[in-house]
Length: 511
Image (cartoon, rainbow, N blue to C red; front, side):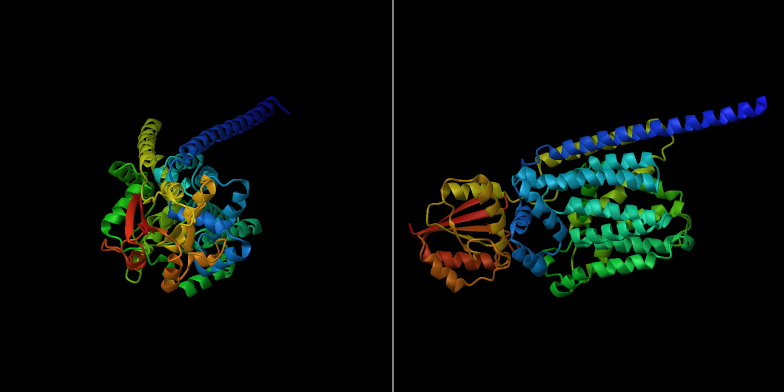
């Protein structure tokens, strides 16, 4: 080998080593940054985790998870199939602890995992810089922090929707049997975690109509068939129950959508909302091309996919307003990863790293302000204070007192606090809802028998009535409140009222 060849070979080896060293350094840098983001996300979510009382829905979550297997299966099929996967996880989680902090920590675990997944999704869709920025945005989003501290299925929903989208992108590039199986699995589990996740799958399907046909795997139709087969029980449940479980949803106004935008962008006011909107426009402006919908290659399509993920679910419910109002803002929290990815991509289009750093710093400062505001007051939850109400009842009740709940499921958060407060005094006897010594699925859906209830009340000198969600849309007491008040008023001459956030307690006595 002559000298020139040896020099060329040496340069090639040196270049290869240098490239490998650079990639290794970048990988270590990314690992360090994402670790810091995850640690910060955990700290923000564990801080004051048990400071606020369980609200109505959280108490229902625990009550469902504590049922025996027979009643657990019956309540899921009869009424609460939505979030069934979360109830199953919570059921096993409760074997290791039952405090407010521990119960809510399951949602924190799902939230931390989802932030890691959005980093991987951003790296898969764009690059590691977008992934890191998106993870930071999600980690410091006040709306997501709130529902990370909530004993409900929302962070599990976000996690599984992010995983579904990750493997959705994976099978477009590498349609292996493993990737297809993981896409089907995570997509199906997402729907079992929260029914509204089905809108993401529809958005994914719609987005494929804008991707070059040559980049769509031939096996894709089989994926949809498997998903449809595996979620058939949910379709059957919805078909038999209809929209009954959502009859409480009110028709939204234009202001409600504006407020939803403020919440989704971090509870920091109009400035973050406008900044997020500007970043999203910057992300998609240069790649959208013609105004007509046409099939485009991957590089342009990925933005359209994220827009479908972000916009289709809420817009679909707008169309459904003609039939039934279904717009519940927290049900669309699974759109947050798409928003974070678009904003992160838009931020990286700024011309200098200094501008990017300044913009990200401003957003993070406003996000932390939004989180501080959430710690003081919930963003969009009307939190009923069951902790204070249960403490009051347990401290004021006497042996032989009767207890009634205006809403049957109102018994569930009360029973949770009976179990954790461990009061030495005997708890009042629950007359409604009541089907035995242990809670059954019938206690969630009990139909009142007012004649039998009046007969039982005559055996008690004192009675307590717990009212929650007791007003009609007009602001007047609802029909059930009036019925129970009349029954008790005809038996007991004396009545006192004690008010708590979201809960009214009436005390009836013979004197």
